[in-house]
Length: 220
Image (cartoon, rainbow, N blue to C red):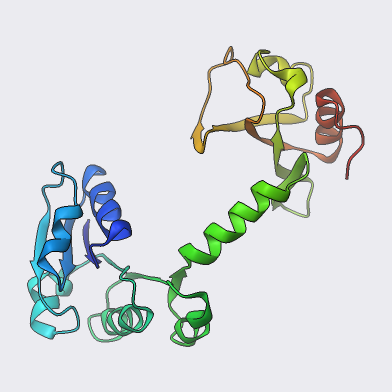
């Protein structure tokens, strides 16, 4: 697929590289030529230098044939203008707009854009990690019969195997394990560590049993 990344700051440079490594055709656009130095040498996509709101710059980037565009500069107004033009004028199928200043999120929402608010999301996620109780529901399926929960592994389970945790509990299914901010799909014998974040899919009875096994009691 053909993607355009507007803004080659830290977010844009990382996004361009990730899209390229996933096998896509990627064009990074920035009004500051030095910004392209942020992109890893692994990147073999194109770069276009110029004012990102200029029609000729966007068309040199191939916007007429783009499958998606991400406006990820540190200017909310610029992101909104480019994203709006991409969607309304060039009919780009998928347009994503970065929200840099949470106070301006309402302005972006007024355009009806698909928004990623990295500042607000990062603050929210940090708050959750600082203040979270031992477990919480992240996603509910159907009418709540099955939910995905996040649990923190306590010291009492450090060194024990991942597959021991849900053994004999037919109403829980391990989903992922996050350690030091990196999520993995662990092998059955993976040893748990204190502070690991475990995601499991479970029924109400299943999560109740799992909480008790971890020593959390009947926490709601």
